[in-house]
Amino acid sequence: MKRSTITIISLVIGLSFFGLLFLQGRIISSMVKMRKEQFDETVLRALDQTSRDMERNETFKYLEEVARRTGYDASGMQVDATRPLPGTSLLLPDSNALSPFGLTKMPAKKSAAPTSAQHAQALQLQPTASLDVANQRFQDFVKNSYLYQKGVLEEVIYTILYNASDKDFRERIDFKLLDRNLRTELESAGINLPYHFSVYDAEGQEVFRCADYTDEGADNSYTQTLFRNDPSQKMGVLRVHFPDMRSYIMGVASKMLPVLVFTILLFLTFTFTVWLIVRQKRETEMKNDFINNMTHEFKTPISSISLAAQMLGDKSIKKSDAMLDNLSGVIVSETRRLRYQVEKVLQMSLYERGNIRFNEKEIDANVVIDDVVKTFQLKVKQSGGTLTAALDAEDGAIFVDEMHFTNVIFNLMDNAVKYRRDDVPLELKVSTRNQAERLIITVEDNGIGMRSEDLKRIFERFYRVHTGNKHNVKGFGLGLAYVKSMVDLMHGNIKAESAPQKGTRFVITLPLID
Image (tube, rainbow, N blue to C red; front, side, top):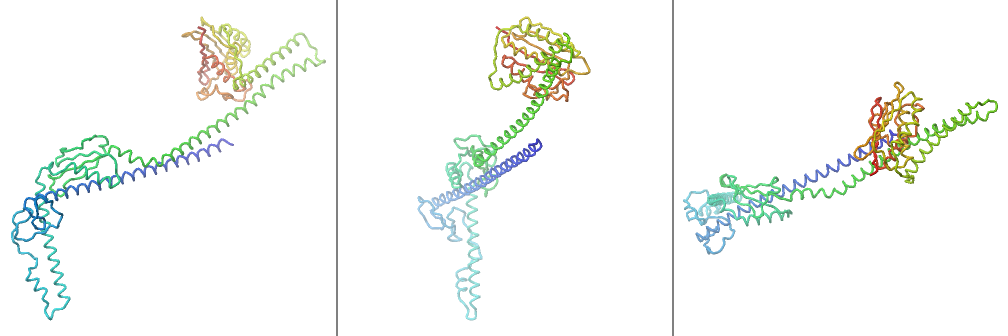
């Protein structure tokens, strides 16, 4: 599958997942908003009803006091002062009588209400009067009576409320009854959350708060005006807040939580799958490059050995001692090169399977590195460069596998020769020093260098820095991966510093023997 196809499929599925998550978020947000609006409406309706109950209770309480004081109920009937006043209609017995509510004496007024004589006259139909006229007169009589009684009733009620509001604001409220009414209204509306409430007078002074009052959740409080039919200076304010309101509102989102979790899990699984596909594709490409490079690397020494063998076997060619030495040297050199390449592949294969043999022993790093430097001197000179060694470490005793340690230094120096610049002579430096009971080994060159993005991946298997199609920079992409693996097994670490056209420096840190 092409990389572009994988990219398009990943983008489509990724956008679909993000769209699904966005829609689920919008649904959850809408549900929470709707739940909050319903909660607000329910609480405000409960507070409004609680305020009405307070006004009704105050009116009934005032009427009871009037009845006990005057001995008359609201209908003007004489009652036992020890009995509570029943809830009857508020009608005056006579416009000239003393009001049973303890009001001032009501003066007799000429009213539009019909008298008994007028009533009798209205009922006496003239022989010439029709039935429709009689009905119209009767309807006018009933209407006038209703308006009269309504006016009297409103006057009495307003007088009662005005007289009741003369009391102190604290005396007008039964706070226990207020708490009971508020709880009843909230529970009847389906809200069983704990709440805290406080009461303020018209001047904003707090006159009462519940016993277990806390400020938790007070930022989202609900207010209701008390005695709203009174003058503004006689009114009060009831403030209620719910500490657990947020969890109650957000509880609706828990129904969508499993769906959201499964969607996120699917998205993470998809992301991981795409990452595996891309990684597998990259490794496949690198393995294909490895096979191609390995074929080329093996082909060159095999061709050289084959050519030398043919020359040795050709009877028509006279062979001098110098030619025989040259041909035998070519065979030995190319055989060693071929064995080195095969050994490198085998060692990495063993390392991947965890079967690599690691025979640790005490060695002097300065001595081993000096041997490698001497071996590399000729190769560096043939490339037109110089190799210098500064083995300044006073203590070079380390406990490692000598063969693998030698291969590590050899690989780093071989890379320096392989990735040298064509415009300047190669300058390869190898040094050792001690630091805090550790051995520091540095291999530095002035080669082509690497970009920062290449530095992050140079220790990966099969990864090769792009340097063009030159034979002298062909490789398997295993050298630095092998180096990193061996240094890790030696309980050390390695880091690389490089810049394009500035060269590369590898720094190896290994523990010294105690």
